[in-house]
Length: 163
Image 1 (cartoon, one colour):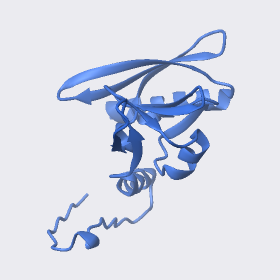
Image 2 (cartoon, helix red, strand yellow):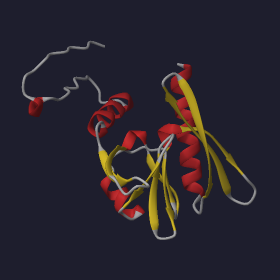
Image 3 (cartoon, helix red, strand yellow):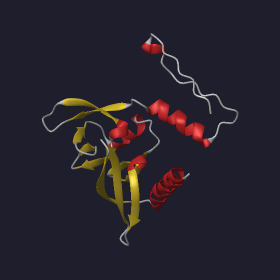
Image 4 (cartoon, one colour):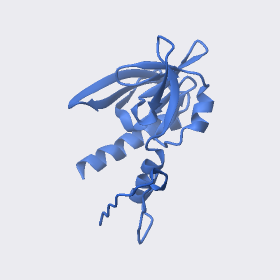
């Protein structure tokens, strides 16, 4: 695969050109990554400071007592949107609705274990300055299709790493 880089002066004209014989799954993933790169949402710190959060840094969103929070590997932010509004706004396909109260970033899932009571034990991870940080998340999944989807995504990620 050839890669051509070119420096330009106008930031408005920045972009990526994909050239392919057949539009494969790999090209679809590259296209989605480029489209969602730099996507961010507004959140509020504990001190009520408004900050911009890159969606790729978010491990999961959780609705708690009529508030929505976004969790990264080391911080959490209050989001002034409902979960369904976030689903509509965020273009990253890796953000999956896991339950009525949770949206997870499937790209950050390390492992998923299903308990007999229907709960999923999700281990999420992120590499920070050479150190792998993990976060445990317990999700009650109402829809077994979501659980299967999360497990399939994890299996695809493992296959890519092995290849």
